[in-house]
Length: 386
Image 1 (cartoon, rainbow, N blue to C red):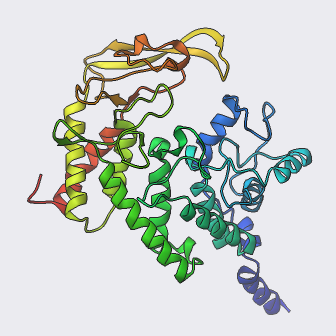
Image 2 (image 1 turned 30 degrees about the vertical axis):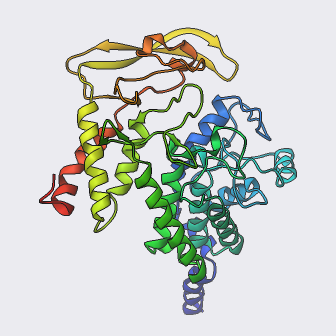
Image 3 (image 1 turned 180 degrees about the vertical axis):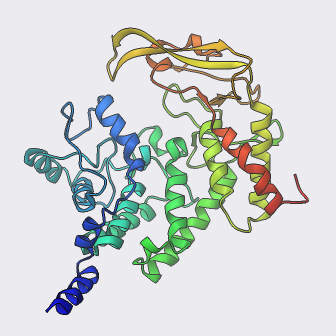
């Protein structure tokens, strides 16, 4: 009798993977959802179907099926997801009903790490639980992603396309590189994407190659030299383009650094990728700023239309501060560039009004990650070229 029970217990591991996952406290990283969660709780969005209550309860990371079921609730009929919700929030019946009624809406996006992060989570949830609806939803999301790509290889921020800046090819908040990383994970045969069929993989490879070519073509040539990228590029001519009013056409070191790190992840990079990486590294070295620090300080509470501010940010002199970079650099002059919702070019953080100064990060340390990783990358892939 004891032997029979033992055999049944072993079989249950394979027959009931969901139960096994729960017993073993399996977890899937949910950090990719943090950006959208922050926006849901802290920034008013008129397009949100449901508005969060304060101190809303959340599922624990080990509650994989509950989180995955939440993700299915948010997925729209076209296969994509809307941004700025908490995938781990425990929803009421009324909130679930509202999401069900919103399935036909088309406000679907790759912004704030949306859609590709949901696809990845569902793929991992299917790997652990073998619940078919998670695989089907992930495949629906992949199809949506492929359909959103421009013929030139770029991805817009929203799809279906909207009549605003979101039509631009978008590197802001890692929209395009996030999509490309998802496709690369499939091409690289990551085990949690093993369910993706051969025909779809061929389409993914084609889309990925077009996307990589688009990334390389978007790298800005300024004053005759290859530099970095803008947050948005024109979807037709690939030139640096205006995003929101405070995101002027410029060389953007925050998103640019993440693009370079993505390119550095390639095995046996082509000569074009090597040149792209090295040109960007040279730009980051030339554009670094030393001797200043950005301090966050307490400030009187102000209620702005989209958010409440209780802090301010100031630049102070500090010879011991680590290297820092402006998020934006003006084209041609290469001066650190700032702007607020008025859209006027400014040249110091102090000139930016407090609403943006306290609610947007105009400096970044991201390029330091590239400079730290570059020596080993260069020694491995370009030992005679530096």
